[in-house]
Image 1 (cartoon, rainbow, N blue to C red):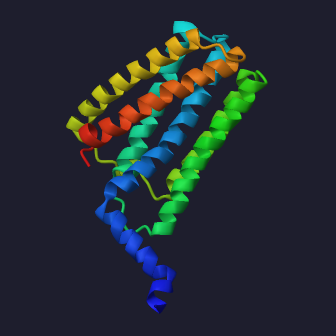
Image 2 (cartoon, helix red, strand yellow; image 1 turned 90 degrees about the horizontal axis):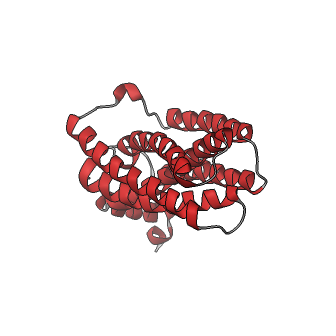
Image 3 (cartoon, rainbow, N blue to C red; image 1 turned 135 degrees about the vertical axis):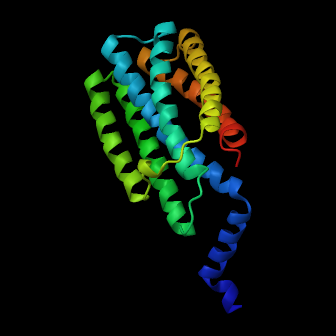
Length: 218
């Protein structure tokens, strides 16, 4: 009975279960990275679109393509290193903390972008948020012990990544163009971000399946 009531016992059991089912860790890490990528996507999209005065149509789709490219490059680095990497020696609760920190940075960024769009903030507001975001992201990357110098590149993974990314880019850019042109619920700034939410959700689902099955095969 004492053993059952001991929290470390449950932690050991849960850790063993998660190690036998790595897809669970992969999914939650990918989800956290997804929020992180969405935050970067939104920040770049709003900085560019507000700077150039674009709020809908294929021109916004082009801006979405630019922001999406930066987001998927970031996604590749985080997913290759963390979600689908060979990380070991990290306890269950440290993993939970990492998930919360990565996801929170993305969620807070998204909320601030939506808040800024609600009040039609200028491009400078989004640029400042982007700089702060990058500082915090860099701090997280370093605190996790990740190093780009130790990054092992494989030719076939880059080819697969390019194909998966290209399809995801088409899905994202096409949806953001169509939805922004046909959905008019509030003001143009908020409608623009609603279109980005729909496009990002669909493309992120595609990316998870493509990354796991095709790119990283884990």
